[in-house]
Image (cartoon, rainbow, N blue to C red; front, side, top):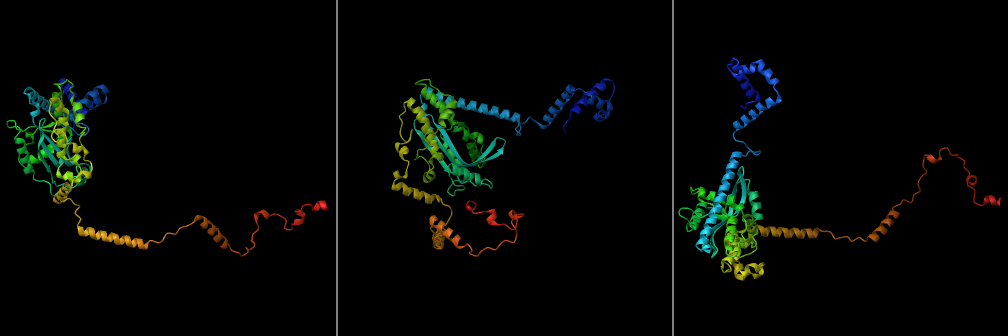
Length: 448
């Protein structure tokens, strides 16, 4: 029960009365004393404000820590902000230390990093500022400035979409990666995917620690959701994996590469802006089989990790005297020029047809149903064509003439009867009117 300002006033009033030698068994006796109530009524607004503040502080303490207007715990927010700041500091220290060691031993171009990209179906809020993402596709790649993207582990997932989230999943899919929900050919065994991921990372372990996974800042919670689903079925811990910003890695590698030529280093915010441009988004030839069929390479996770490697090489290799090799450090010339299906060979078309049959991408409508529907549509069209009446062409000039003639013909030739009533204009007028007197012929008087 919250304590009011009068409660704290009674405590002070009881103490003052006890100093004067008057005792009370409980606060009920204090509240029943008319002198206490009278003094409370006559207290000044300034003194009353003191007790009001005490009541508010007591209410806040009773409710726990201070919260925002949307229910966020301020102390928890401050703690999370501090943890995030410490995490960012450790990330930058790790990246700088690894690159510094590479420069010291002159093997910067041989340093290996792990990239990861994840596409998703829907986002579900599971708390304040906490979201869970349903993964649709992911790609993990090993990168170095010397060899570019060397190995890639890629999977398209088959996810069971819960009730109420299919519309969101379909909309996100149609707007981005276009992977069908609950794709039959997709991978659904998270235990298998976890073991394959561990095998992929084993070769780059430092002691007992896995190498950090680098991705874009906006995809960090998406990668976390994928890892959580993997470790849940294997009794692991998501804390075994570190997810760092690839924009920070890009900026550090670029600054380290140019320092031998000049000191034109760029801040992190500029590195993030440059990396987000994705100027190679239109290249083709590095996507997975599924996205090659539907021609959506710009959203394919496999193509994206490849483009990340090309972007870093484009900004760094020239300063480290690394010869650019097409397909390793930069896209092949044909990748930029290949924009239409005219360049696709017959063998590639055949392979795509085979992949389509293998992936079984259809709308689940049988051929028999389609044939019946086509026949029905054809018969309906023929019937409608037969029922259509011929058009009547109307000449408006002739139409107006014929209309006036019809109106003339329709006029009755019978004489109209004399009205039984007297018009208002003739009321009061003399009945015997001699038209010759009232209206003499012109020129008659002159003759007379």
